[in-house]
Image 1 (tube, rainbow, N blue to C red):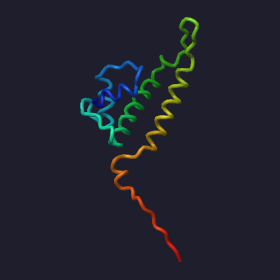
Image 2: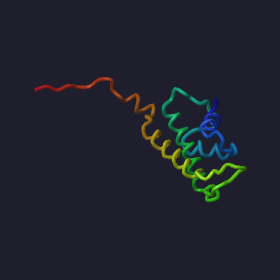
Image 3: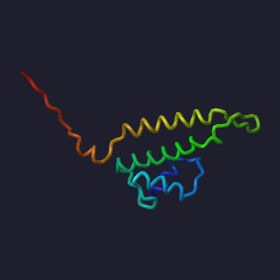
Image 4: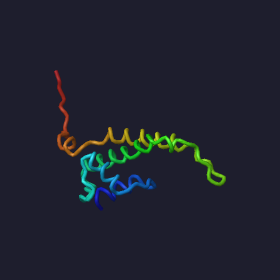
Length: 114
């Protein structure tokens, strides 16, 4: 699986051209057709950052803020749900560590006694 396919998984249901998704990936330090490295914390964090960029772009589109009614179903909470997902992704991104941060973590602590 490449980075573009991984971003498409993360943004399932959002129809964007591959060129557009590629730009989001490149803006977040990923090449679209490079192999996705699931073991890399940095790669995972950058995929989430790219997905967040996609959602923020959708949130900036005033046409998507309307209430819609299809058959007997009203879809009026689209914007609210979108903003909730953006908040979730932002929290997740803040808590994820990069590969470099994981390497610099120490597995011990020091105790001082008088």
